[in-house]
Image 1 (cartoon, helix red, strand yellow):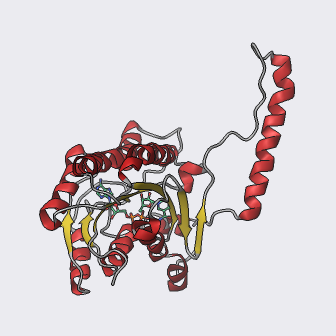
Image 2: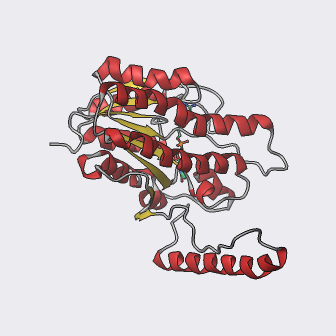
Length: 303
Ligand SMILES: NC(=O)c1ccc[n+]([C@@H]2O[C@H](COP(=O)([O-])OP(=O)(O)OC[C@H]3O[C@@H](n4cnc5c(N)ncnc54)[C@H](O)[C@@H]3O)[C@@H](O)[C@H]2O)c1
């Protein structure tokens, strides 16, 4: 008995990295998998057929999978993901919006094309794949479905040189909170994953810092560490857990704060600038105390 027996999962960007590990683990737990991947370069250029390799791996291990090479950055690509699941397996229960690219530049050098490409794959990609799935859930009253959206500490905390990626990843956390409300009626959970893993996305960053990536690093911080959290959330055990941000990186699994008002002052009428001289420092101090308390419980592991 697998934890995902009878379930059908579509995983975007599952040709390598975190998506591939999620596909392999979910398949080993009995899910039938649509392995989506455009197969391009890390900056989003090019195409390839790496999705077929993951399908072959799953099949060799006795699982069921089918490939889809559409781009999630296009509405038709997102629709084809659902169509592939329906055609191959007759339904869809789980969507992992994992596909991603990077085009790191500071704002001084950020060209429109770099901004648009990253927003298109990450933020629009979430919309393109989620809308057909949401409509399918509603039209068929399909209960117990799961959506996992892939954010990043880059967007949740901020990271130098990633205004395009960080904006998309922060947007994805907001997108999750709204979808969780809109799909609650159908028992579909929608959560944000904030992963950390040594993949082609992060290994070059380590190498640029002069750090060598040894097998030991890959064992301790590889993408395989993110897959159990996603698989658990996709299973029956994850029912009712929705609108959360889970951080998974190496041996760490964590839950993150959501935006909330920490401290508030109220008055009738306009605040004067002199009053704000008093109040704003108190607000900033309250936030610092809140941060300090969260730091005590553990800062997330980043790679
Ligand atoms: N690795 C990390 O530490 C880390 C940290 C934070 C967030 N993330 C996020 O996790 C997700 C997976 O990252 P990864 O590290 O496994 O990266 P990866 O580069 O190893 O894998 C991403 C996959 O997405 C595919 N892809 C890119 N554009 C696509 C498109 N338009 N349509 C379909 N597929 C497309 C790529 O071909 C690639 O195989 C991404 O959303 C990434 O932003 C990763």
